[in-house]
Image 1 (cartoon, rainbow, N blue to C red):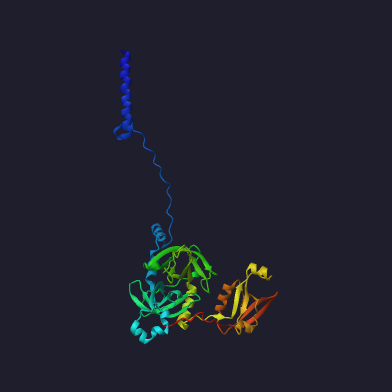
Image 2 (spheres, one colour):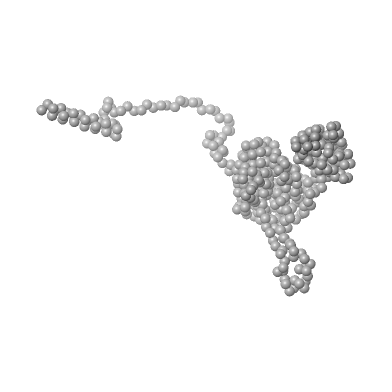
Length: 399
């Protein structure tokens, strides 16, 4: 009898403990306060006094938005970027006099003529409210007609004011006023790592904005142009972007997109832009003279490389060696000889051919400049009267 009562008691206690566990887990508020599990302790974060922001500084939310979006720069630059359409009437073997004979054409018409119209597409940048447009020289090269499409959808005929193949720049003029001109920035203040936007019309799909950073500055000796000082960027630049704008995060023009390195024809993240400092100098001269006037001394220079210096036992491993002298040119008249090494110009050191060409180009024709050459083992100072650099290719003006 006693064992039976103990078994009933044990079973009742087990059931009560089970019910208490269930209530404590699922409905603790049903239990008396003494039986309810204790609430987890509340950990209060330490309080810090808010830092006082400078007057006029954006809030944290505004700073975050500014970092995530460059819409203000794009909105500022997009209206000044245009699409450029060029038309060229190609002529081939049909120039044979037989095909132009009236009797021949009477019976056979133009079926033997291969005269055809070709179109190309590029980009440009409006740089003055009265209609001056910058683009690449190769975009408008040999074009018979040039048409500009504004961001508003308006089309306008353009004439070529002048082109400079040695920097691959050209200036167009359209007959419109009050245009949205893009402000020039200062590429000298640009730094590697700065964010930039490339704006143009790649593959003819329509105006497009791509973002990247400045990958390098002062790129030279790429073999793209005669005078090189490129901004390198990884912002996507594709066919059709040529002549378009490279702008900073304030929407100011710091370069004209001109070339890419590519094995496929598309962007691989290595693009080049002509800095706006060069662009402004070239544009000013083209508008004023119809072409760019540069200094010239009439020599064929070659970089002094370590291999060349060792092979010919040259005393220097930098500078520009004179490989040829133009007969009757300024350099020959001054006494420059083949084999001379140009080491300085007007007291400024010359490190390579590209630097030499850029320095000579800036000298005004008719002026006299002092050049220092290394001849054998002696330094020779020669005053040279600067000539005018001949145009590499006559550019038609006023089309």
